[in-house]
Amino acid sequence: MSAKHVIIVVGAGPAGLSVANLMSKQGHEVVVLNRDIKFGGLAEYGIFPNKHKLRGGLRKGYGEILTRPNIHYFGNVMVGNGAHLTVEELRALAPGALVFSTGAQGTKTIGVEGEAAKGVYHAKDCVYHFNLLPGFSTSPFEMGQRVAVIGIGDVMVDIAHWLSSRKHVAEVHVVVRRGPAERKYNPKEIRAVCSYIDQESLAKELIRVSARMEAVGQSSEKVLGDMKAEFTKCEPLQSQTRMHFHFLSSPKRVLTDAQNHVTGLELEDTRLEVKGADTAAVGMKTTYTLPCDSVIFAVGDRVEEKVGLPYKGGIFVTNPNRTQNDPDDSLFQAYDETAGAVLPGVFLCGWARKASEGLVGVAKRDGEWCGEVVTRYLDTRTSPPSEDAAQTLRRLETLLKSRQPDLVRADDLVALSEMEKQEGLRRDIEEFKFPTNEEMLAAIRMHKAGAKVPASR
Image (tube, rainbow, N blue to C red; front, side, top):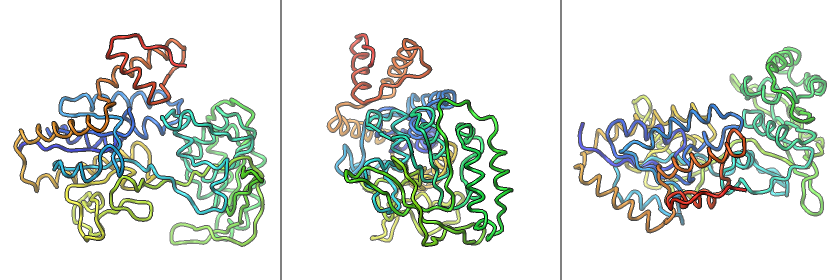
């Protein structure tokens, strides 16, 4: 193999670590910069907390990758405008390639009047909260007793699971712009909450929207039967929460009291319109009110503009000029529309490339595709001598230490993991996490100093 390159990967979720895995196996020096102290991204902070076996397996695999001698992990590092490092500074280091797998950290809104009211939340923030992501773990998420959740995908299921099994709310109302035939959740995932679904209410709702379904050739009786067939192997009840569905209903306005607290949702009736092989929801100009104490939007995310890459309409801009390669290089290349050219050596993958598209497995596959694209790009470059790679690594580490004194390395995380494991055993719980960056950093410092880590509260 030709002399090694330095590959910088920003983000340590499933997509970024997939790229790091491939690049390290090719013999390159790989730098992983991660906003969070812990690696994992979606796999660590996006999987429902009770899926211990799945998360544990992913952690083990990622840990193996990050402890390879040619992978250099730096956690607790922000990349973006006004952050520890900027895109321009990273490009100035002249790495072989710069890959962004920063996820979709921005909040997607749908422009509903009143969505800034007290009691309106976004699903991603709730997921971060119950998965103990620092910055969200200790924030209050006051839900009240009647919660409206907008959306009908797997994220909705996780939110409903949390509301029923952890928050013990009285009612969860799932609001869906289209009909039950367009539901997006995985039938295996709905098992987490199907015991909470009010079957009588569901049957009445299907009758309510049956004429609108039949207008596009859908049978409400068949769809109801299909849904009930999915409600098997339901997890046991952990509360008295009841779950209701409101189909063909589009949020128009969040209703509030004088203190700007949520009191309800104004919903517009919709009908289905066939669009090719799919359907679209069309407003009917008639409305009704759903009383509720809080509203959670589970409608997807957008990327974070502050990262500093070319951005438009909630996404980072990629090359519009398709190639003949498979996977298509253009889909992963960052693109400057002003200059009308790609940013040489700058690539996107995972949710940074396509926000909210799939979960861990899809992100991993996207990283593998991106790795193939990066490999083709590197084959077109004149390889730098090995000592240049070493020099680049030294320059980067010196720059990082000057900007962020609390750098976290892979060996720090090995120690942190062991401390959390011991704390979990002490509390007799399956999994324990330090909920804040401050507590994690304090534990790491004490471990380095050889002191006993005090029990977390």
